[in-house]
Structures are given as C-alpha cells and as structure tokens.
Image 1 (cartoon, rainbow, N blue to C red):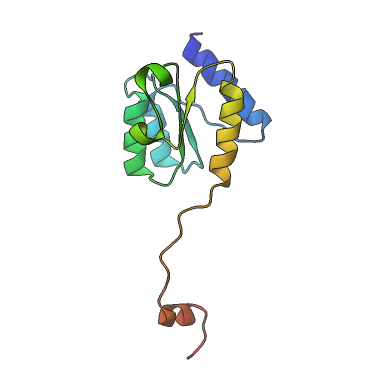
Image 2 (cartoon, rainbow, N blue to C red):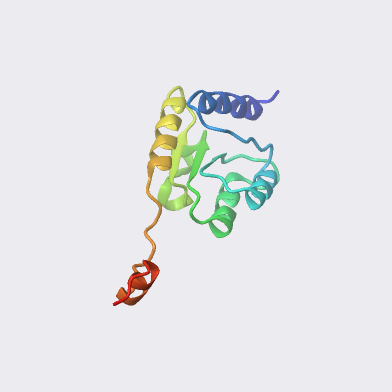
Length: 134
C-alpha cells in the first residue's frame, strides 16, 4: 500500500469514528464520476491524485456541484502557497502531525455551515405560496 492509500484509509477511519459515512475514490477521475452520480455533503481531496489532480478536481467540482464544500489536503501548503482564496477550496489543510485535528474541525465547521440563502420572494409569491389570499 502506498502512502496515499494509507492516508485515505486513515482519514476514512477517523471520519467514520466521528459518525460520517465515507466513500473513498482511488483517483480524481473516479471521484468526479462518483460526484456526478451521487450527491455528497462534503468532499475531501489530496492535491496529488492519479489522472486528475486535486486542484483540477476542485475546479471541476465547482462547476458540477458548486454548493458542495471541499477540503484540500496537501504536503506542500506552505511551499506552494496554497490557501482557500487561490485554490477555491473551503479549507486547506497541511499534512502534518496536526492534520487529523484540523480535518475533524474543518469537516464539522463546513457541515454546520448554512447553505446560501435563496432569493427572497416577492410579497405576492409569498402569500400565494402560503395559500393565503390578499
């Protein structure tokens, strides 16, 4: 088993212990395909993936499923200057001894985040939707 597979397995175990259902993909292309077939509450991706890298996956997910929060994990956060603004991720986590703590916190924060508000209805629509007459 390579280190990416070990990392996926460890993150899966940690998140399942927190009560989350976890689906693991072995490549960026596989992850994109799974996301096109099933709705996920959150995506966690490494920046180094087979065939489609994590940043490319993230960009494609923003088009395909713009409301799904994405956590990007990288060994090279500092070296590459990766952050939420320049990657489009909702959270960027450095692989380190503190990675698990940061991952649990980021997952909890992003899953508690309220979805974007829908545009307000006009008064007439609001009353009609409630079945009341004016």
